[in-house]
Length: 295
Image (cartoon, rainbow, N blue to C red; front, side):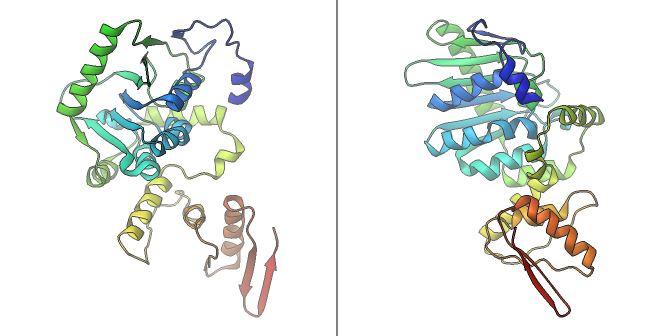
C-alpha cells in the first residue's frame, strides 16, 4: 500500500535539495511549501486527476488565504485529463488562473513548482508532472532551488514562467474546457498506466469519490444551478457511474427522491447512496409498502 510505503521511508538521512523518489517523496515537500506560500506557480506538461486530488485540499486552503495560484499546462496528445481541469475549476473557481500552453508545433515538457514565501522562495524542478505516481511512488528526480542561495537562477526560471504564462498561453475558460473535453480521447498507453497505478495504490475510501467524467458532469450541474436552472438531465454512456453521480450530486441536500421502474434498480441505488452518504437514512416506497431504514 502507498501509505505503508510512505511511513517506512527514512527522511532523516535524505538530502535537503535532492528528491529522487526513493528516500523522499516530492508530495511531502510540495504540501509543506503550499502551506507557507504567498504565491504559487505550477508549470507542468500535463495534469492528471490523481495528482490534482492529492493537492486540491491544500491548494483550496491556500486560495482561501488569498494566495495567488497560477497553473500552466499542456494539451498536446490529450494527456492532460479534462477531469483534472474540471476539479481545479470546481474547487478553486476564479481563485486559480489556469492556462494551456499555446504555441503550435512546439514541444512543452517543463515540470516545476514555484513558491514565493514571506522572505524567501523555492522552485522544485525536475521530472515530476502533476500525477499521483510522480508525486509519490514513481522514480522521479527533482531538485529544490532556493531563491536566496541561487537568486540569479531562480529569477531566470521565474521570468521565463512569466513570459510563457502571459505571452504564450490561453486561459482555460469554461468554453475552452468544454471544447477540449468534447474532443478529448485518452491515449491507450496512458489509460493502461493509470489502470496499473490504481490497482496498486487505490484505497477503499477513494472508491466513493467522484472520478473521470463524473467530475465534469458535477461541474456542469453546479454551473447550471448558478445560472438559475432548477432542472437538469445528464446523458452518459454505460459504465460512467450515473447512479453514483446522482449520489455525489445529492450531498448538499437533506432529502432526495430517487425514482426507478424496477425494484432491483432501487435497491442497487440505495447501496450506492449509502456508500456516498453513510450517515443518512434510507427508506423504500412502492405499492403499499413504506419503510424507513436507519443506517
